[in-house]
Structures are given as structure tokens and as C-alpha cells.
Image 1: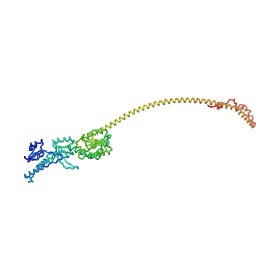
Image 2 (image 1 turned 45 degrees about the vertical axis):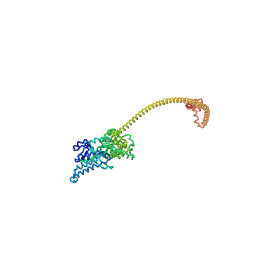
Image 3 (image 1 turned 90 degrees about the vertical axis):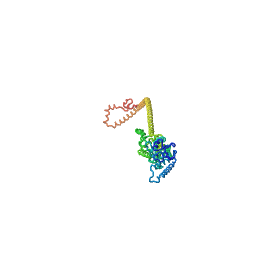
Image 4 (image 1 turned 30 degrees about the vertical axis):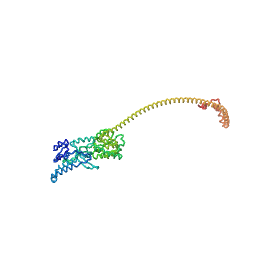
Length: 530
């Protein structure tokens, strides 16, 4: 049997292979070409040299490729060169296309099937349905250890990528780590590349979960993982610091409600912006938060909470937030941190370390608005309760005042009536007592008058008895005095009494007799006073 180079030609490309000169082997159900044919045109179909069609080989994860095919190719090329004399004439040599075609044949023979390979995507380009990738491997320090070009043909991409996205929620993008089944290939026109025909989505999920698990365990060992969750929740929202990507869709949804709350003066919102994906995004978020908090502290406007939001996205886009420094910064905050990142299915280490996690930015602002509305209703209810109690107390006090006023008025009237009665009684008593006193005084006065009159009569009687005796004595003394005076009086004065005898006869005698009437003034003076 002549030596053949077997091809792995998909059914859809059989016409193209046939047009280039390939032939179909019905026994092995493979297309093949003669070794003398220019193999560069068939390199894309993974040329497999050999006299018989080999069984398809699919290499699993961790298996090592065989170099037997490459050795056979090298041996054949050496033999062919020796027979033809080409190697002995280096001035002529072989064509570049034949050399590269031989490399392509060796590679395709060495890797007859895909090999499960762990890669990290550096760049993705879409063109005509095909997906072109730049792959790499890095060490822990981030240094690139290996790089390669890869592609996923349109028909394969249409089959495996939707399944991968549904299973992981991730899209093929920069930064994502994959476990792919890659078949090495070499084309003289384009060089070395990998053709990917399958992706193990479990590896990607495991890598993301492992990264989160590592960060979570470290935070737990440091005793800070639950720290922000234990911060007391705000009693109400009056000032909120928001960190989000600039002009993100999630921020727009958030501001539809937050601007309305700010418009009515219910809550102030301060916004800071940062990238949320790509290399260094976590450091930018920490810097933006630190700067914004410093500005709030300088202005004396301390927020009630910090909100971290971004719209939905692929899992690998959100994976940039699975960063230890960012998670530790969130856990160390003394303000409650609220997150609304991605969709309901999405979760990051930032969500786990935050005080409260919400599925979307809209649900974050809804929770803020709900608490503000709740406090407003409570304040309104308290105001209405106070108003109702005040009105009731006012009515009760008014009724009590009216009752007290009526009681005071009644008591006052009773006291006035009683005072009037007591006054009348007192006046009557005073009148009676006064009449009694007057009557008693009158009786006493009459008694005194009687006593005075009796004493006066007694004195008058005694005086009448004494008057004649005193009068006789006076007359005797007067006579004696007159007799003595007459002897000493000159002679010329002795006749005077004769001329004045008439006047002397008119002189009353003293003391008057008891029968003689007394002068009115003397009688009035002697009368007793009442």
C-alpha cells in the first residue's frame, strides 16, 4: 500500500479538499493526499502521515503529546533529501513552503487531537463570526511565561460559546482563565496557532470560586470578614456616598430615584467614579473611595452609608472586584457599605464583605427610598398622634377649665351669699349688741345721773348747813374788820357810808341763804354731766 498523508477534513470542507486534489478513503472514511503533493495547502486539515489511517486521538487534561509523528516526518524528510541529493547540495536547499509544510505535518502528526490546556485570555477579536484570541500563561508575579495565538472557528464558536456563557455567566474576554481543548497547528502563511474546539466551563467557575474562597479565608483568619456587617445600620438616610463607573447604565437607573430624593431635600448624594474592570480597577476604586471620604470629612458632611454600584455584566468582568485589598478596605469601613453589583446571580467578595448586598443598583436606591419613606410615615404618624393627643388634651383641659370655672363661680356665689348672710347676721348682731350697749349705757347713765343728783343734793344740803355758819363767821370777821377799820379811818371818810347807805343796802349778803335763788350759771356748773 502506497504511503498516504491522511487529512482531518470536516464534512463541510470536503469539497474544498477535493478541489485541491485530496482523495477519499472509504475504508477509513478519511481524505488523503500523496506525499509528493504540496502539503502546505492541506496544513489546515491536520495532516496525518502513514500508510494506514490512524484512529482519532483526543488527549485529556494533563496528558503529554507524542513526538512519534514528528520523528517519522523528520526521518522521511531526511531520507527523501538523501535520495534526491538535496541535502548534499545545500546551495539549492528546499523551499520555505516545503520546510514549513513539514513543520506543519510534524505538528499535526504529534498532536492528532486537542490537548486540554490552561490559558489566560489577553485579547479577543471577533471577525466574520470567528473568534481570535491572544493567550498567555503567567506566574504568581504576573510575568508572562508563554504566549500563543488561538482561534475558534465560527461554526465551533456558535456551538460552544453560548453553552459556556449560560453555564458560567461569563464571556470570553481579557483576564478570564480558561481550560480549553486546543489543537496545535502550523500554517506556512500564518505560523503557529491553536485551534480551540471545546471549553471546560467548570474550570472557569472553579477558578473564580477558588479566588473568592482564598480571599474570604484570609479575611476570616484576620477577623475582619464580618466587621462591616456588624456596623449599626443607619436610622435614616440623609447623606450617601456613591461610587460607580462613570456614565454606567446602573448609575443611570440609580440616579432616576436618587435625583428625585435630592430634589425634595430628603437625602444628599455625593458621587465618585472609578473603573470597575480591567487591570488595576480595584486599586482605583479604593483610591476613589478614600478621596471622597476625605472630602466629606473636610466638609463636615459625614455620609450615613457608602454605596458601591455597577450595572450587570459577565462574571469575568465582575471578577476584577474579587481583590483582597478592595475587600479589606470595605470590611474596615466604620460606615455601612451597601453594594448593588451586577444581576441577581452575580456575587463578588465585595458583596460578601459589605454590610448589605442588593442584586442591582435599582434595588439599592429602592431600599434607601423605602427607609426614608418609612421614617417619613413614622414621623407623620407621630405628628398625627401628637396632634390628636394635643387636641384631646386641649379638649380635656378646656372641659376641665370650664368645669373648674363653673365650680369656682358656684363656689364664689356660694361664698358671696354666705358672706352676705354672715354680714347681715353680723350687722344684726352688731345692731343688737349696740342697742344692748346703748340701753345698758342709758341705764348706767341714768343711774349715774341719779347718783350725781343725789350726791349734789347731799352736797347742797351740807353746803346749806355750812353756809349760815360760815356766813356768820364771815359777818363776824367782817364786823370785826370793819370795826377796826373804822377806828383807823380818818374822820373825813367816816361820813361816806352815810351817803352811800342806799348803795350799801343794795349789796347782797354772803353767803346767801339757802332759800335764796342761786345764779343759773352756778347751778349749771354743779349739775352732773351725762
